[in-house]
Image: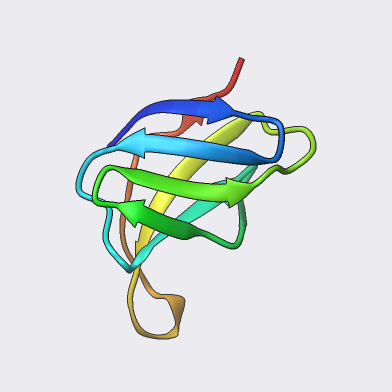
Length: 74
């Protein structure tokens, strides 16, 4: 679950719940390099034109195990 997305100067922080090492951020439907800070926080480098964000739990061979609702960035 995503609670908030904060677009900073250099990084974007995704706040939510139950993130794991298998959590990967998708920006505008494209997978981006994801860093897990803790079970409630993920970070990505800023991406131009962020409109929507979701987090997918990926298994072997990037098989999708679960997905959050899309978070619309305003």
